[in-house]
Image 1 (cartoon, rainbow, N blue to C red):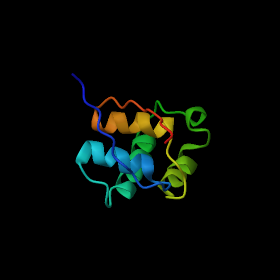
Image 2: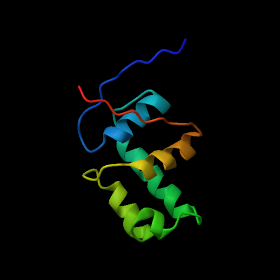
Image 3: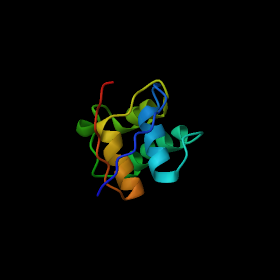
Image 4: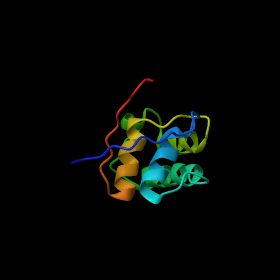
Length: 95
């Protein structure tokens, strides 16, 4: 039987990165900027990721995703899956 455990994550612009950091490395503190930098480096070093997918030129995206005022989304989930070699399923709940 599968078990689902709900964890609360701070409601800030880093929530995706906090959640992924917790799941992949067991920590939330201090990991957001590391994961943002890892996403930027993944994009920068991957020739198969196009500006069309990012919605902007690569270098602009790399600066944008490092800014903690910007939210992560579907692209960032996919890039973090590649980084940690895991499958992430996103479920949204409103309580």
